[in-house]
Amino acid sequence: MMVGNGVTNWKYDGTPGAFEMAYWHSLIPRELYERAHQLGCPLQGVGGWPTKECEEVADQFDNLFGSDDPS
Image (cartoon, rainbow, N blue to C red; front, side):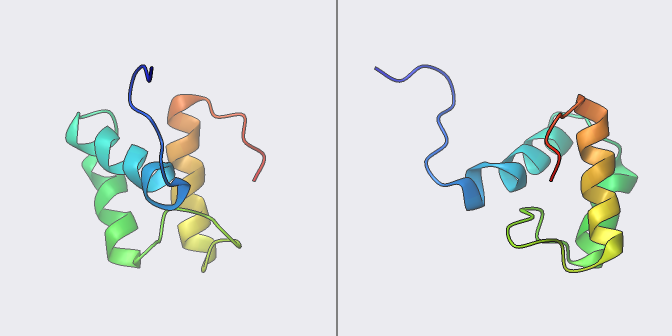
């Protein structure tokens, strides 16, 4: 039995899914969402962030929710 919203693929259901869900449920500012898309950030962090700006977007997102993830 599965309870809740299961993650079946971390590449799509992890941070990228959380970022989109957070925006469409008005949990993050529009400016953060638009900046991530303007910069072309992959929002998954696998193998590192492509730019310092994308890393900053990810850090801002994590800080909004108190993430303890050190990556």
